[in-house]
Structures are given as structure tokens and as C-alpha cells.
Length: 248
Image (cartoon, rainbow, N blue to C red; front, side, top):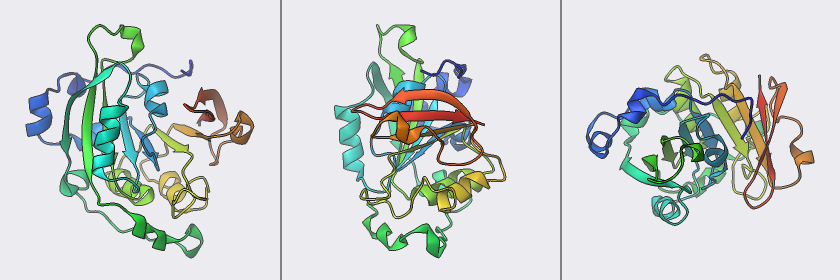
């Protein structure tokens, strides 16, 4: 946990959700986007939730390399320690991007968009996790929201945040897989497509940048993008590695 980060008060919309309202009421897109953490090329990495749940209550994970069945299995097998699923539901393309989903328009220097042929069947699942009975309050927040989307991380940022006139509170660039991991572009490069979308978003830039991966802290002592001058500390990555946290 980073001591400098304030705890968030549980918003009313999240505290009042029930399995019935999640299934039957309109998808609360704007509320989920507000004060969220955006994690492109996320795999099934629980580190941001493990360390920051409470500082952030809405997590948006995006990865085009996994099928829905793999996500469901990971949620069942791994889950989040001390939490159980209150409810989950499928989110439609129209609910997710009511203003439309523009195709990614990369520059030649952005990478190899032909690698997007590895895109799995797109899906989006919204899950609300609830702290298990008997777990102490200091274990973590009573609830948090997780939106998992199978899509390209750059295009999804544009569709979710830019076209909806909002920005996430934090963005996580953690082991994004641009070398041998199958990612078509380099998310760590401030001149490439994801950083251009994020840093030039008219609604503003994220307050926090998480940057890390496998390897020693020496690899992540400087932020991957400009403008994040204040180093708040490191988070330990499960399985080895470090995640640096910076603010503006």
C-alpha cells in the first residue's frame, strides 16, 4: 500500500447494488469510468486490485489475448483473496460504447497492427466483488467493481474514455508484452498510440501512473511516460518483480 494515496469513500451507487439491480438495471458506464484504474494488456493480474483496492474502487482490465471461458475460469480458480462474487453480467457493445467504437488508426511507427489477428472473440464482463463475511474491515473495501474487456488496449481507451469525455484516475502499464508477449505496439513508449490517446485526452490525464513488471526495481526507477514527476514508491509484484507508482 502506498501511504500517500487517500482511501476512497464507498460511492452510493456501488454500495446499493444488488444481484438483481446488476442484472436488470441500466449499465452504469459513467460511474464505472469515474475514478477508475485502467489496465491494458492486463492478463489476469490481480496486483493492482491487491495493492490499491480501497484507494480505487473501479478497475477496468483490457486484454485481447484471452477467451471468455479463460476469464471465467481464472475468476473461479484465482479470484481475489477474501472476496466473493456478488454478481456478474455480460456488457453489450452498445452499453460499453454508446457513442460508437472507432477503429484504431495507428501510425506506421506504432508497431504491427497485423498482429491484431490474434484477437480473441471480443467480450465484456462486469463483476462486482464483495468482501466475504468474517473478513476484517482492514482487509479491504466492502466492495469493488471489475470490468474485464477482450479488446485492443489503445482502441478501448479511446472508446471508453475519450469519446465519453472522461479520464481514469490511474493507468497501469505492467509487463505489457510488446516484445515476445504478442502485443502489436509498445504501451511503454510515450510516442506510440496508447500514450498519445491517454496524454492528449481532452478530459485530462490520469493522476497516477503504475509502471513495472518482472525484474528488479532498477528497471522501473523512472516512469515510462513524461509528466509524472513524483515517485510515490514501489508495489511488490506477485511472482517477483516491482511496480513503481508516480503522480503528477
